[in-house]
Image 1 (cartoon, rainbow, N blue to C red):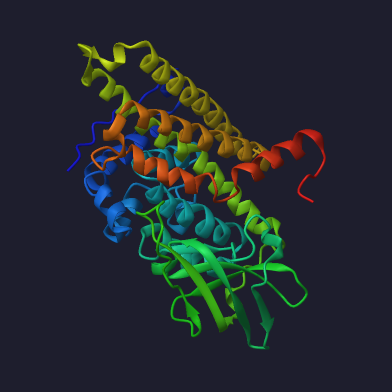
Image 2: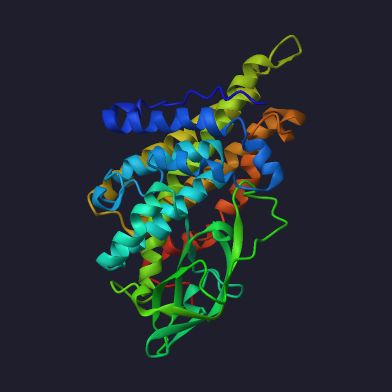
Length: 392
């Protein structure tokens, strides 16, 4: 069983820019991860199964809806605190962060922002406590980067809605109690609907064969003439902008989380470079290995500065979708590069389960694709700076 020796790296002394509350929240998340998750994460990844017994612990550190107001069961924290928690979770595993990120940003966020008061009181406290887990149904088998082309639809049957369609690549789906599903009405307008487990015709088959995010449960959402009560329609907002605003929140969390994965890879490579002897001295004493380490911590530090500023802007309500896209794209790409270089430094040991680097590498292949691919986020930035839409 691997001992988690991680201590953190803060080359530009950014802890001085955090509040005492921020640091307490981060440190509590870090200690919980080191005690409860690090000892079992390799086994969970090998078995391709999310360890559901961790859900109460995730709730206890505020990982579920930390910025949701206390009246609905949240912790009422700011967005930097949310980011720091996501960073500590992904420092251990991207799948762990995905579980919490989906719950917070893609399930609790839309219910809080666009739900009725009755919906908030019914769902949010149970989601915040981890009693219920949710999932987010937007991506379809034939509609990923173009969610507006979705075919999942519902019809008004008088006293209920009749929902049909399918969603794919859905984190938490196999064991979620509620799904925030985005579907078109008879006029083609997109709305959010809360679909609860146990509704007839609603199934969530598990997807198998993943080589990435293996410690996260992924599934499909199948709707075969599902009768959904009318009170389960999110009334606050419709149109494609509604689910995309949820993705902004999730992508923001990913921007922080990816730094965590990079920090873990750097931490392992740095420690290894001081212990591994070749040609009579530690490999960290060789120029090429120092080059790798210096570039890693430089890129990590740049990402930390970018994301901390983004958190400040988000707290002020001034962070735009394009800003979030830039940070998500930059930080995940950075983490992939750091993981690859760290793996090389460990040589053959880098591909074994004795070290976390190869697992991070595989996970980041998913993170760079989901919630907006690397190229899609590039085009979002391009459109923002030029004013020209290159998507069509």
